[in-house]
Each structure stands twice: as C-alpha cells, then as structure tokens.
Amino acid sequence: MFNSVRVRFAPSPTGHLHIGGARTALFNWLFARHNDGTFLLRIEDTDRSRSTAEHINSIIEGMEWLKMDWDEGPYRQTDRFDIYRSYADKLMKEGKAYYCYCSPEELEQRRKEAISQGKTPKYDGRCRDLKEPIPDRNPSIRFWMPQEGEVTVNDLIKGKVIFDNANLDDLIIVRSDGTPTYNFTVVVDDVDMNITHVIRGDDHLNNTPKQIHIYNAIGYEVPFFAHLPMILGSDKTRLSKRHGATSVLAYKEMGYLPDALVNYLVRLGWSHGDQEIFTREELIQYFSCENVGKSSAVFNPEKLLWLNSQYIISSRPEDLAELVMPFLIKEGIMLEGRTIDKEWLSKAISTLKERSKTLVELANSLKYYIADDIEYDPKAKEKFLNEKNLPNMIELKKLLEKLDDFIATDIEKVFISFVEESNIKLGNIAQPVRVAVTGRTESPGIFDVLEVVGKEKTLKRLEKAIRMIETSKV
RNA sequence: GGUCCUAUCGUCUAGUGGCCCAGGACAUGGCCCUCUCAAGGCUAAAACACGGGUUCGAAUCCCGUUGGGACCGCCA
Image (tube, rainbow, N blue to C red; front, side):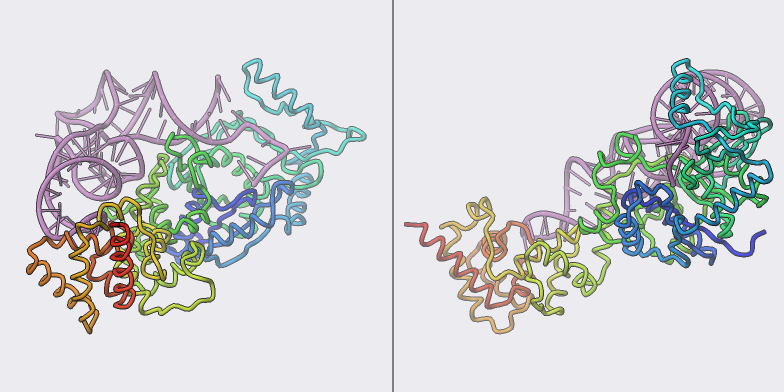
C-alpha cells in the first residue's frame, strides 16, 4: 500500500502540447484530484538538440489554458543529470551495467543487416564481457538485461501482460557524450519523485518490461502502470498534422472553450454510463482507471464542435463577454483599447449563444451589433431589399419612430399590428428588416435584434436601406 | 519481420453470462416548433469482424483467423 497517490505528466518539449499529450495529462490530473493525490509536471528534455524553451512555454500555456494545475514542478531533466549519473555509477559498480564501445555507425550497420536478413534487430551483447577499454573511443553505458525468464506488467487498464526476457535488448542508459537516455531517466525520476502510478500512452507498453528490470536493478518497488489507448486520426493512423489541428492552443485560437475540450478528451477512452457532459467536479468525482477502455479512439472534430456549442449555451453571457473580447479585437470588430458596455454586450451575447458553436462565430455575429455600419450579403440584399418590400419598410419605419420604449415586447406589438392591418405575413416584413439591420438573412429573433441594436441605429439602418432601394429604382 | 496491444452503429461509447432480436451521444434523413438561422422535441436508418468451442444460455468466457494500432534508436 502506498501513502498517497503521486502521478506525473512528463512531456518532451520537442513540440507543442498536442491532443494526445493533453489527454494523458488530463487522465493523470483527474486521477490525482480524484484520489486527493499529487500531480507533478516534468519536462523530459534530455534530447538537447530537439528540445526548445519555446515548446516548454507552449506546453505550460496549454496546461494552464485547460486548467490542469500541477502541485510540483515543472521539473526539468536537464537539471538532474547528477542524479542520473549517480544511479548509473551505482549500476556500473554493481555489475548491472557495462561500457559499450560500439559506435552508432557500427550499430546502425548491424541493425540494417539484421533487418535485411529478416531477423529481429537486437544488440548482440558483444561488449558485455570486455575486460579492457577500447582506446580512442567514448563508451556508452548499457544496462545488462536478464536473458531468461519473463516479466509481467500488471496494468490497470490492459490487465496482465507477459513479456519474454529473451526479447529484451541491453539498452543504452548513458550516451557516449555522458547524457542519460529516456528509459533510464524515467525510471530514476519516477523512483526519485516517489511516483505511485505511471499513467501514459500505450505506445510505452513495450518499454515497460525493460523499465521494470531497471527498477529491480536499482532496488525499488515498481509503481502501478496504466497504459492509455492511443488517439487516432480519421484514417485510423496515429493523430498528426495531416489530420488538422493537433496543438491544444490551436483550439484556443479557433474559439473552443477549455472545458469543452477537456470534456471531449475525457470521453475518448473513458465513460460514465451514458453521460456525455460533465462538470469538472463530476469528472473528478467519477474518474477511475476501471472505466477506461482498452482500444484506440478516432478523434472526431464534429463531436468536439457540438460539445463546444453546448458549453457556450450553458455559459453565462457575462462570462462569454470576457472570453469573446480577444476575438472581437483579433477579428477587427472592436478596436483595442476601446471600451464597451459590458451589460449591453452580455445582452447581445444572450441572443447569440445558442447559434454560435465557437467564440469565433460568436464574435462574427456580434459584428452587426457592434459595428457602426453593416455590410449587406449580396444575395440577401437582392432578395429582400427591393421595390416590392419598400412600402412596407417605409411604413414600419414610421411606426418604429413613434415607439418610445424600444424593447422587444413593444417592438413585437408594432410588428404584429402592422402585419394584421396590412394583411401580410410576419416573414414578409421581418426578413427585409433583418437584412436592412444585420445584412444577413439569418439572425436571432428580429425583435430582440432591434432592441439590442437600439432605436437610433435601427432607424438609421432602415433609412439607409430605404434610400438605397429608392436610388437604385431609377 | 519479431514482440505487444486491440476489435459493439460512419465516429465516441453503454454493456463485466440471462434484464440486449443490443442502449446513449455526434454526424445524417424526416416531422414538429417557427419571422430567418439556430436551439429544443419527436422520429428514421445504422453495429456485436469471422470461425470454432465452453455453457441450459454468450456481445460478454476460451482458442484460432482476419483487420487495426504501437514498439523494436546513443528519440521520448
């Protein structure tokens, strides 16, 4: 039994935080929070040539955006080389590791040969019993893997998985330049950081038996393992750039809500009966490795989009007003630094919530509320802003001018009585007005639109439309 | 090629031997609501990969086949 749960997310900063990584992080985070444990962030940057500070920042930004807070770290493996060194020395001293003088080129050549002969490429162990160093060569350090027997991985998700030791390679734990390698650093760190549960992608399942042997050699108890199924693209191959956006921050820019992404990601592989939408609290309360599926899942952008629209619908307009602000500026709908009446904006948003699937869509719809002037959609203009509708528009404008309280219920009364008196359908007047005021054929209910746009702008826009029709008449 | 994982509607999944001639959700079609567009409601079509066992009984357990995926680096 362990005292308390300690889990970690250990990304390599060779790219942005992507969908797959984010889900791994999320499951770790949920597991920690559910068990009242500790969640740590560890940057695995031992590959110095491919790791960048920019990616570290981007990963952290992604984590923060998704509101997955960590209790310890971020640790960086490059800060911990002394620790790996001491463990490597210990293994050398105990005869559990040895110097290997084979050069990468030689190894590569032997590997190619093995493959061409149809054999499994495997290190032949030729340096194991070397008594004398080979001069003028910097050796790497290899771990002496047991050659007989088997290891079993007791996986919380996959169950019991048995590996034959004979298939395991003597892997390099320290490169010839003195830097440690992945399979060694993970074990040392997980031991050193008292990790109780290793939750990661199942692409690591095959590494696990090797790591277990390293745990044994170092003399530490192995943690629990949970290997998560992969996320695939629509063609069932590993999710990559080919499948569209894979960076978490790209979804931020496309106007997705972090909670929606989290909700979508958690349902890829995990379920709780038939429930589709969860609050964070529910996720933390319900999450368990037992309910994680074993098979890989295909990433489905349409369902994510639907979830996002659901989250927008259930958000408070005031909150959406804050969230949409950067998009209004980015889309050039609002000038940076210009102030806007928050209460009015919230009212506008409440009419738009259920027709916006993303914050970008919301911002674009907000355009006809905020802008001083509107542009007509050419087709809409042609169909509704014409001579046929002109008399009605003129008449309605007159009636609206007389209205003191420019609120939806009163506006509606004006429309209804006008429609009854002139014996036309509501649509016959609503659509031309809609185009005159929004420039489009689709919008929230016209009475609400007019109220939000306000009397002054409404009349101005109607006037403009009327004049435009009149001048084009000649 | 070797090793390992995996297999329910197009997709995400419920299902842990009888409650299942398989339920929910996205997407798709139809209808309702309606000033447009949505949202919402109703509804339709849509799956246990295949073959053997075990069992009174199998989507569920076992074996095989096939399909899919991952790993086999001085990458992580």
